[in-house]
Image (tube, rainbow, N blue to C red; front, side, top):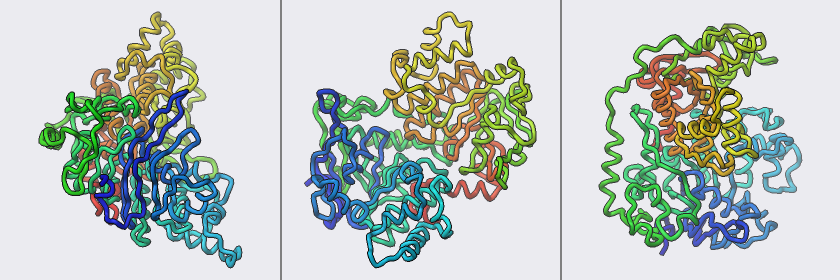
Length: 614
C-alpha cells in the first residue's frame, strides 16, 4: 500500500500513483516530478506546499491534463474512479469544469481581457438549451453573488476594470460554474494583500464545505495551508517528502525540509535577530537522483542519505516521511525549533538617527479623473541606518508614495526632500541635483525578472550600471565581482542570464545593481512578496546585513505585517492614501491604536482554522 492510499478514507475522488513528468532536454529526458502518489477524499481539503521548483503546479496540471506540449506525463491519475491520463483533448472537455476546476494564481492573465465578466462566466456554465439570454444572465449574477459580488453591474465590466480581489472572485465563479467535484487552487492569493487574501480563502473554504467539494490548495505559505486544509503534502525537487495532517505537521514536522520551511516563516509575535534561512536553492530532480533530494541543503545529511533513494514510509499512523534518519534526528529537529522560538534579547534600532535622507511633508496626489486622492497629507521620513516600513492594503497609496519619492509620479501638493534637495518638481531639477538625488536613493521592485534584460548576462547588466553611476571605475570586472559578493552571490553568477537564476538570486542581483550608486537609502517595493518563505528569509537577512555594514537606510513597502516585524525599526500604516498610525514597529504591532491596524493584524495568516472564521 502506498503512502497516499493509507492516509485517507477509501472513498477517494482523486487517486494518483507513480506519476512521473519529464521534459525533452536536447536528446535527453529531464525529470520534472518523480513517483508522485497522492489521494484526496470527497469533501477533503489537501495542500501542496514547497518552494518554487518543487513540482507542485506541474503535479496539479497533470491532474487537469493541462501540461504544456514540452512535458510528458506517465503513471495513473484516477478521477471519480476513471483513469484520465490517456484522455484526448476532446474528452477532457467533458471533464474540466464538471469534475475538476482550477483557479489560477494570476486572474488577470487567466481571464480573457476582451470579454466582459458575464461572458467569461457564461461560457463556463453548463449548456442548457432551455435557458434564454435573460435567464443565463440571471444565473451569472447568481454565481457572482455566491462569490461575494452583489453588484450586478460587475457582470458588464472587463477584468481590467476590477481590483485584484474582485478579479480573483470572478475567476472563482468561472471555475465553479459547472459545479466541479474537485477544485484546484494554484497559489490563488499570492499577489493579494492580507485582508483580500483572507477573504478569498474564507470564500473558497465556505463554498467547499457547503458543496462537500474536494479542494487541492497549492501554496508556499505554511500558515495558509494549516489554516485552510486537512492534510498537507510537502514537495521538494519533484518528490513528496512528507505527508501529514495539518495540525500534526504544524506541531512536529518529521522531515528536515518541512522543519526548515517552518523555521523560515517570519513570526508576527516577536522580532528575531536573524531569520532561519535554508541555504542554496531547489535543485533539478535529476541532479539529486539516487539519494535524498534534500541532502545537499540538510544539516543532518550523512553518507547513508545519498546511498539510495529513500522511500516515503509510515513513521506513525497517518504520518509519512522520506527521511532515512528521522529516528536519529527527530530530537535534534525539536531542539532547533525550541531554540528558534526563544525570545531574543531586546533588539535596538539606530542609536540616534541622523537627519532624514528622505523627508516627505504633507504630500497629496490625485490622479486625473479620480475622486479620491491616492495620497492625502502624507508625511514620512527615513534616515540612514534605519529601516522604515510602509504597510497597508492594495490601493492604500504605498507604491504611489515610493514612485513620487523617486520622481516617477508628480505630486499635487506638499514637499519631498531627498538628500537635502527639494524634489517636489523633478522636471525642474538641474542635471547635477538630479544625479545627486538618484545616487542617494535607489529602488528595488517586486519582480526582478521584468527589470533585468533577459538577453544580457548578469555581468553585462551590472557593468552597465557601474559605467553609469561610477564612470571613473577602472576595474569594472572587479567591481562587478565585489557587488555580487556583497549580496552573497559567487563571481560566476556574472556569466549567467536572468532565466537561469532562481527568484531569490534575481532579487539579489537587483539589489546589487541598486548598490552600484552607493545609495544612502534603498526603497524596496514588495520586494519579497512573491518569494518562497526560505528565499524571503535569505533576502531579509541580506537587507539586515547591508543596513548594519553599510549604514544603509531602507524604506520597506509590504502588506505582510510578519515581515515588517522582522525588518522595520519604525512603521507607517497607510489606508486610502492617509497615514493612520506610525511609531516603533513593536509598539504598533503589540498595541495598535487605529482600528485599521487592528483589522490588518487580524487578517494576518495564522496556522489555525479560526483564522478564516474570526
